[in-house]
Length: 482
Image 1 (tube, rainbow, N blue to C red):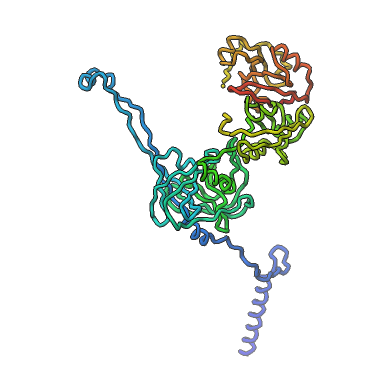
Image 2 (cartoon, rainbow, N blue to C red):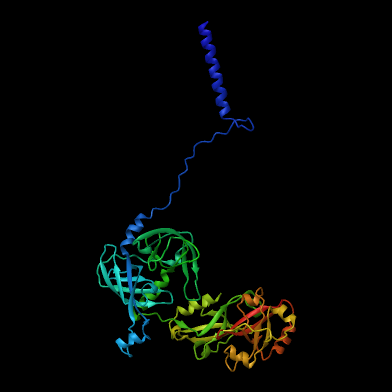
């Protein structure tokens, strides 16, 4: 009897276990058996190890201490006090106060005999520069050469057998590749941060720069330090950060630095070729107006300089330099700046629907060297509303009083812009109340009535070309008639 009871209990337990096991592997919503997956054997991808690169490069990174001396003006609260002058005499003059300001930056050694690259703004106007190496040794440095245009300086210390860092090829850098930044942010010396190349060819102004952008953390004090690739090569000089965002840093490409090092060593500065023109990028309306989809639009020509001597004029569109196609104004600036003063280049321009070629002997960039006001309603003429609707602004004649108030040149003729619509294309192209229009479609503008008559002849979709005088200089732009 007991044996049968034990056997029955055993059978019951097995049944319950089987049912539970089956239930465990059943889908609770459908009741169907669950699918059982085999364990994965895929390899987990790990982040790169930067320690070897940091250990190799760090000894070549230096701390730069710059001391600037300046004078405060002599101001005394007692200078006009009779009691004070009774004791010190009527001719007493307070002496200006001399003060020094110390700032820190970074740099890196590029040769065993002590040449160091950094940013120009790190050592600008410094009376004394002290270099501290990774091992703690300090050296006074002298400035060998500077290039403020791309913010690079070359220093030299009297030392031998220093550890240097190799210079890479920034042209081969790819967006998304790993990089590390080494420097002295906020005086935390030899700080290593890692990130990727976020973008290439970034511009922060209208100069020669073409920055590498990185999200490797860069802060004040990193300026002049190296941006290093995974081969331990310097591919950029950390130079600037975005004040509006975090982890948006910029570095001067090392190829740009390598191209100027010989001049910095030999001459202490960099001489670049110049045409003597100001140019702008073609807007979409410019392309329609001139009938060409690429090039740099010549805005002004400096009298007596290279372009002027060769015969290049405003309204010309430069489309080629030697065998190099000019897609935008940046291409032109880059190519011309790569030449030396005195070099001769062949320039092709697009003028009045035809190509013209010029031989131009370049000058030096160092040789290539004003505001409107709001007008009262009484001064604004009664420009027809249709003109305002077509262009987004009204115009009026330049009266003698207006010419005096705007401090315009005596020989300047044209009409002045008034009542501009901030939602108009004209406003987007930086035309403002007080801007002077001197030419319409390459013909002189002599009066508001003449300008109005010409605009009245246009229809929607037409493109007009204006030459304007603004803030002391001329520029050319195109607008689409609305």
